[in-house]
Image 1: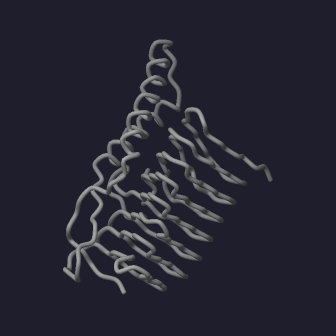
Image 2: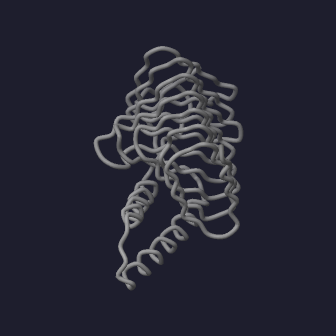
Length: 241
């Protein structure tokens, strides 16, 4: 079963505050060091991109479901519990999509257009995409976001992510995880990480940068264009071919 909801409020993720504070401090230090030394580099452009992404994430107000089928523009999977949805073929949704609790959303051999953000938040919330294209149209940088919190999981296999060729947001907190295998990203990902989370990307063309401010485990295998901003207590594995 799926239903639509129109009520919106902020997702209760306390760790976001820590992420914003530490990320701003880290980025400001980098910029000040470059300015005082008179050095400029291509990396400065990424600092600006990270700041834009953080500002966008701070303003995100994901909708939460209300009881009953109330109509609106938000697709909710996971309420009531044990809710699941499989999408195949062509599908278009105007509005955000949220997967909560133990909801499962699967894209199989699908061409999906989502005019909104994607949120995955719950102890067993899961989104998978296999042999699919997920198109998130953007009119400007960082218009669209993927947010994963609690123990939410996202798994993409042999899938294309199309963000109109523009930079976009990814935010993972708590014990969330994302796994990508043979994924092509048409755009550039700016990712904020906070928590004991997992990122596992293999054989993918997924140009991206990661701002890591807490415990995290990241594994990259045969990937391209990675930029890491990090503090202590981080584990990164770059496995060569």
